[in-house]
Image 1: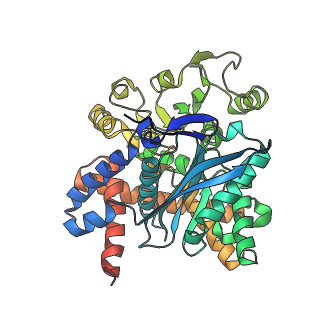
Image 2 (image 1 turned 90 degrees about the vertical axis):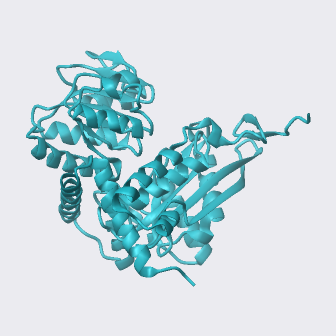
Image 3 (image 1 turned 60 degrees about the horizontal axis):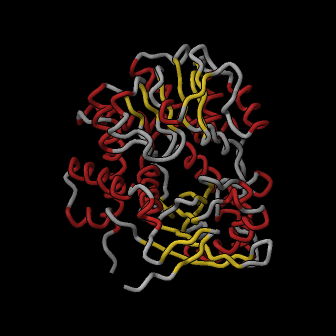
Length: 436
């Protein structure tokens, strides 16, 4: 039998028969399963189910980048648009060695439901490149970003598909994308991305938006459960942008942060951790691990610490059937995308855990991205107070819609959020009809 030809990608050799999707958890099946459950509850038409169950458009690109030492490496990237019935596609671009087409499909579908849950006029999109950017220089990351932008430029734009930061991408990445896209057209097009630096069309409040939106939903949940945030014990898995800002905002509400973690591990102190001091430690040492006065815990152990509120703010598939039964929190607030599997959902529901699903909990980021896009399109910019007030209004209204659906149909909050979102997208798709 012939041996498959080896392919070298970012310093690692794999064979032609090995696909990235085989190495990564199949969260696309999870996303479709979640959609199927909502579609069944809504008694959705079979034809409409087939339309909404798959992405509208998928683009796979393989592109060369010249490295600092003169070598040429070939990288693989994706941009998927799930549905655009309610407006342009919207969704982040991530750089990670475990990116796969199935992952990007799932994330694009979740973006469709997320935008619909908070009722903003976007559809769902997502993108990613298979790369560990920590192994690249800044110049190499810029070269990769500009070439990837060029490859996907036929399907993005302020009226087509608007990327944003995601895992291992940031405001600088968006600046490079905006500049590259603008150079292709010969004039500045600031609305092609959101999450940009403020000096080139970014929005005030965008950096804190995901965490702030999550805290707004937690304030609403605390009223429903009569569990005040003041004095509540909080554990946060993931101390990146969303997790670190959520820790600060929750501490300002009087909550006690008892555990925090990043990709290197976690720390635990039942008496409380000061987010400002932990952030300073991480800036100096590169991780929260080793913070004085705290016990070390793994990311898996953090999920099971004794707390009132658990905030998964890292990657997907963290709460599973294997550990859901050990979770002690009364509220799980999904600041990350897809941190809980369907099997774990059922276990948490049976335990009486109040789960704020990702498509509601972390929708603050895309909501303020929408504000940024509106400001770019109008060339008129808002104050941070106006942005935060508008964000609170939208998040509160979305929480109330989802909770009302949960109560009315006697379903868990995730199913309720999906029912609200899928119904809105289905209505728009149905009203527009099938072309031709």
